[in-house]
Picture 1 (cartoon, rainbow, N blue to C red):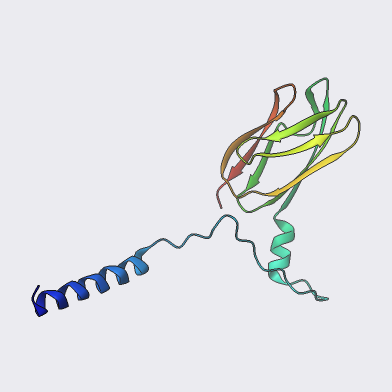
Picture 2: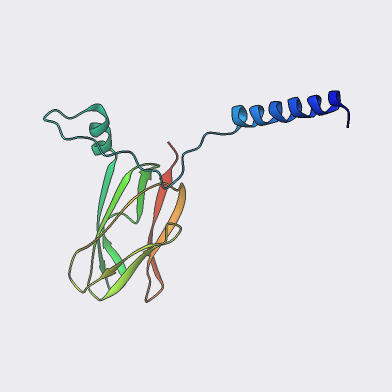
Length: 141
């Protein structure tokens, strides 16, 4: 290989590497979480936004049917979601897609909290009896 060809090859590789870094999409990892804010007397804009992005839902299940609370939980991508649920029998609530679950003890409130990082429609069910009781809808930002 001649000296000129080697120089062209090295320049070509440098250009390709540079283009790769310039053009690659910048998407955050789903496991990235914001750094905790320091405590202060005045709420900051970011902590206010964080508070307003919390969604809580109260559900009651009797005879394997949802008798109180919405059957479709509507949230936006990035929201902190809490599902408070009470059942009249021992069960397990399972949220498909997110693969999150919480054990339910008869007549005792249970909570499932997570961040809505996946968009779409995700059914949730009483796992032991395979009874679908509702769905989570996560809209993109």
